[in-house]
Image (cartoon, rainbow, N blue to C red; front, side, top):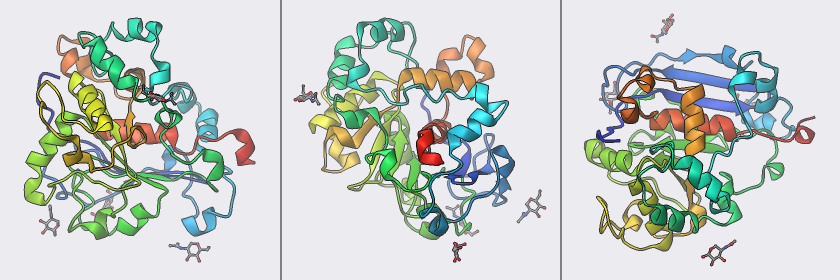
Length: 326
Ligand SMILES: *[C@@H]1O[C@H](CO)[C@@H](O)[C@H](O)[C@H]1NC(C)=O
Ligand SMILES: *[C@@H]1O[C@H](CO)[C@@H](O)[C@H](O)[C@H]1NC(C)=O
Ligand SMILES: *[C@@H]1O[C@H](CO)[C@@H](O)[C@H](O)[C@H]1NC(C)=O
Ligand SMILES: *[C@@H]1O[C@H](CO)[C@@H](O)[C@H](O)[C@H]1NC(C)=O
């Protein structure tokens, strides 16, 4: 991660995991030139064919069990069946920290592992993620949620400007946002609800600089909001640890930063999630293969925050046990 990763490109996606299938509305995949947040084309490419028919709306949905959960759709699909591994842990928590994990992750550089990173810093961070809430994304156990878990992932590519999708986005059970998620002034288009905010310390700080002119002057905060750290560097482990402890970052490029400035006054382990490096490897290998992977630039390549959040949602929303679904 030697290069500054300005969060300038990526897929702008809004998708819904719903009872009668998944609606994936792929708004844009503008990777080339970047017109700035909330600008650019408005056309919507709706790839409903991705998983199935459009679902009923949320009013009808809540009264029904989840009859067509995502994992079943995946299982039945000849291509996605082999692509998805829904058993892989999405989050890294303290209870997964073993000598074996250490040995295995020490062979890969961040974000895929810990090679060259301080073992002590990592161990002390993970020891704080030792509660059961650190092992799962959602606070509420799945079984307690009626219907299917519907998620929207909102990117910042610009195509939502003028879309009037705000209400639709907010109607989802969980809304994922990331990096320079400008909301103020664009509520009608992007909604206001944020359940998860995903970032690396680098992309978060870059966003605060790059998009301050658009009003992105603080990271979304709120009582029910959870932060998803992408461990792209030792910085991310250090910031995460300091955030949970409610202390300034003790060393490194963020030395002296007060995590409350970014995440608000409420500091507790349950507020912060950490993507598992193995999950990032798996996603990269299976879904986000880049031509850079087999070159000497391999270490500079990292999947975009948006792609990681979308795939995180696809691996967590609407995974249910079969008994819930019939
Ligand atoms: C959003 O769209 C409006 C109307 O086309 C335009 O004037 C405005 O500059 C756009 N905002 C951003 C942030 O791109
Ligand atoms: C969106 O794209 C479709 C297919 O390319 C086209 O028929 C339609 O006119 C476009 N809509 C807008 C608003 O540009
Ligand atoms: C959702 O479904 C209910 C019941 O079928 C219907 O009355 C309502 O108009 C629908 N809402 C939308 C936004 O489609
Ligand atoms: C987690 O670790 C902290 C600090 O070491 C300890 O106080 C707490 O009891 C632990 N919690 C669990 C659930 O093990």
